Length: 535
Image 1: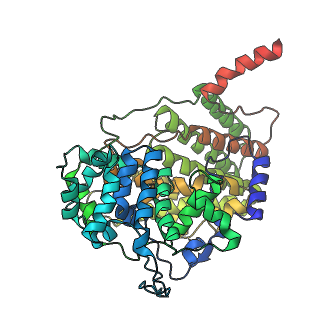
Image 2: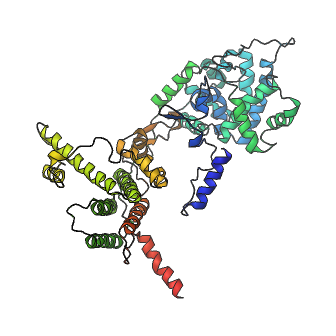
């Protein structure tokens, strides 16, 4: 993270409203500013590296180390690390260079990178001689739990050298061995997990002790930390170094059997649905209805006290209309218990737009803008009305033709009313937010809530899919029995509506303050605070 980004975050914390920072704020992720705009896309730094070929540890490279994964899934850490050390020492001779320093290893292709094969993986174990294979598996089976740990590997139809494994283990697998395999793989799906790092260390140490990786004197200490892992050095430094180095010690193209293995795992084991048995639940509102309706009554009262003799007062109607509309949306969020549902997020998105719109109109506070906002809306009513006249067959049930006609002709005859197919301010919501100082509101709420309106994949994934809990299915997504209960939008919605009340108070000042909307929790705390003050 850049120093500028850190300073910016510190400044935001100082100027914040007391809410907690994101629990992910300490992650080493690129900031928005570090993305580069290319066309309509914001591209992160790593994705801009030329000829980059990202490959997945879990999908493509972890299966090659399946024998080690199974050991780590069954044995205690101290025991499986001891076994891995013994295997590394035994296999060292497989990869030693000739006396003249020559090596049969291919040189890196600048187009695709190095194809590293100095690995004791499933593919290598299928290539070595029967005697060499026997030497390795003897080490693995010497542990009392060795047979139980390795037996699940016999379930894999397309495992390289499967006949050898069956001959050496000489025990038939059981259906329960799928569960053993699943539990073992669950520990290594995360490429940064302790177990994954241990197995990746094994790949690195084999290359080191066989002379394929040589540390210069300046990095001799790092070499010792790798050799004595995990008992030497600061693991906060050593573990990332191991993972970084292991990424350079991989076969270029995943073996064909790996895809066949994942296909068999999906075919032979069932999904585990964590949402099974769930039912639809509706959480009661946290909005205090008394404060909501009291605020609405006061807003209406102030509207009436500001009515003038003009037939059309775009400023009065629009300012108070936006606030009243926000009240209605907030009422539906709470009283209809949709604040944890998809429609609640859609409603929050609506509140974001009306709040920014009011802030912008109040900031400019020009008769032209107030009128433009009003005329644009009337033009939209006219457009919808005219489209209905061209519709053949059943009209949409939600449309009220009479109301459309009335709105379109309310201020002037619709034959003199233009239809603006652009934006009423010749702008967009983001620019409006910047111009009126509401960019913080836009950044907090707009992007994610908009996804629920547009039905983009992220909103669909969030609400209607869940990760299968069978690790052999690699956390693939399956439909939820019922859609997920979301975080309540009520606290955010209340804040936006109260913000709008403050704006309308400034536009139409009075000695009498409009009460703010509160949550039930706030109302419950107030008497306690009064008692403390009185004491």
